[in-house]
Image (cartoon, rainbow over all chains, first blue to last red; front, side):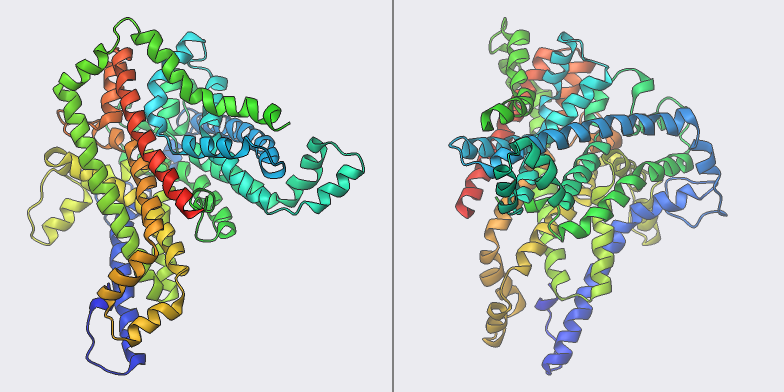
Length: 286
Length: 268
């Protein structure tokens, strides 16, 4: 947009510099607006008297972290999150690898319809199916069980994981496997021994991405789990509002930070690998 | 082999979507289309449809899309440290868990929150945003959270435009806006299409963000379809009705999904 501005100084070089400065200014303004809510969480977590405003803390303290770092507030929910997301991620990655392999390696008339179905499924709003899934889970007695929730998590994440996995797998050359086949390896053996090790970074991306998506998901465990002891962090964070009486914003902020840190770190880990495109490598390129 | 392996997996992915019809019928087969008839005669439902429309248009079509494009094109000519900083902040907002994002923006928009503090400081009238304009507040929240995606899509698209073309246009004397309108936009129109589609689908299924910020209130004034569905099915225990609403939401989602696939096919 700064290109719309007219700068009277004629030389192309200074014009370019001006343009860059204008772009920088515009971006910094937007960044400031985006950063305000983030600043709140960081400052409040360190503030003994946190309220809802961004403000300079009245002295720094780690009391808020101290207060929330207790088994029932932090560790149990985080452990639950870990079990849920870890289990579901494992299931997703294994199933995605098994499904992507034939899609990537064998020509079949079913490939195209299958891929299109997957793409279609990737786009559906998961929120919409939660009510029927709840009803189904009640009937088959999976409601309020970890394994049921893990299973559904994995099922909901699978379409995209398969899609992503197939794209990475397509990048692994076929010759090495053919050599293995002549030596008598079965397709499953060549998948596990040759293809997956060669596409290590791709597998890592699928794993991390699935994990991050589920870690932040609120609605699925909110609907499918009932017992407070089983709640993952995404749901238990609600307790800071309702059940514990008055809201202690500092503690809420501290908990938010503890809860968010793992996914941000994981994201940073894979972001470089995916370049700028991240999730799009799979979804947009077709 | 393909079938044998893909079959069960396909079924996993598939069951998530078919059980909808199974339970939908099990719950509502006795009433036939009554649920749908009720829905279209229900003012609360129509209100939710309207709010969903407002929410989607404001936050996804206008907000995320335009802001994402603006950021991406500014980033093309910004200096590197600024680019990194802005990218970092915007993407952090995107990566944060949904509920945390909800809290942050709840704090931002509350009566005692940051926004009003800033407005006071600027001597502008402040108000209780979550009460007076809840749908606007949650739309902004969704823009805050979702813009990173558009920004990434458009950055990738803009990087693929050959430099020579824009430079040639510049030499011919086309100003910034004209270059944007006549060259850049037509060249990235497929990315625009897919991005709009994915944004819309994302936005249709937003639940946690609104739930945390307003619970759909006050008085249903930020109750989009997912929240309406939840209220009917669980707070009022009308699972059949809730499922009917879910089905409608799913149909809308499927339509978008199909359009999206058509767009992709054009590209492949």
